[in-house]
Length: 147
Image (cartoon, rainbow, N blue to C red):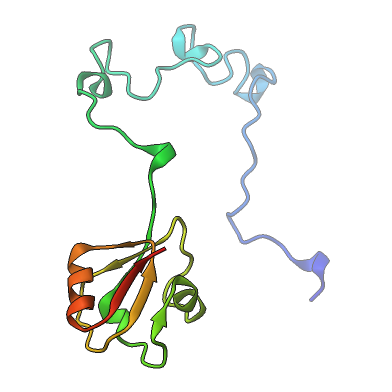
């Protein structure tokens, strides 16, 4: 088999419809658009969300809340049950977790959540902690440090 012998699968290639090329083609004169009117014009048709002239749904519903874009923080999160699997390190930092593949990247920081239990005393350095996570870490004899 050579490259010039390759052909597309049967039925995968269609000829494009050439419109406006004379009456004999069957697609001449009005170019398959019928006679006059909004739909026959260039750019014709109603936009998405048009409801026949009544007030569209997206304008009838009230606006609520806000997004705090410039100041919002998106933390990479990890639970205590995942941290408790690390046995050979006593000081856990975001770099250690990234190095071990437990967190992909720390985006705007790392937040420690409280799901799971921790049994040994370790020091955890992170950008944020949930209050329940702080309680569990201090009960186990460990320390929390906000970076």
